[in-house]
Amino acid sequence: MKGVEALDQNNTLSALFYFEKALDIEESPIISSYFAFCIAKERGQLSKAISLCEEAIKKDPESSIHYLNLGRIYLLSNKREDAIKIFREGLNYEANQKIVDELNKLGTRKFPVISFLKRSSLINKYLGIIFNKLRLR
Image (cartoon, rainbow, N blue to C red):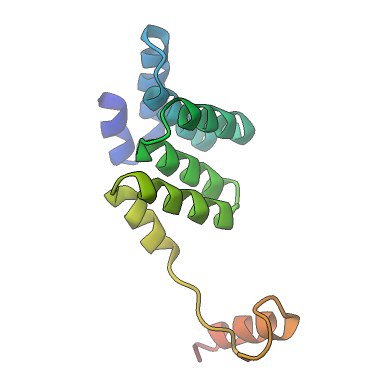
């Protein structure tokens, strides 16, 4: 509980300490999931963190906490699309306001500047960047 409180106060270093101690006492998917997020954020061990969260999801697939932590790790890894996918998957199992908050922080995408071209078109991409800098969108 102290680890979760520390995370709620954006103190991942303290949370890491608490979750490490908790893992020494008992291994559970919830503790592993939170620990994974902490090591990703504090130590930069992204691949280890992802595997720990995926393992927690396999053991306890209906807990949205695992999806929240994995999504946050994906955001730290600059994998925005994967994070959004995982957040949405977590919401399928249970309503979690923290996941909703993360999705709201990410925002929604605007329509392509030239609608008949694909979003991935270089013209749309660079026009979108220019329009955003000029605050025309």
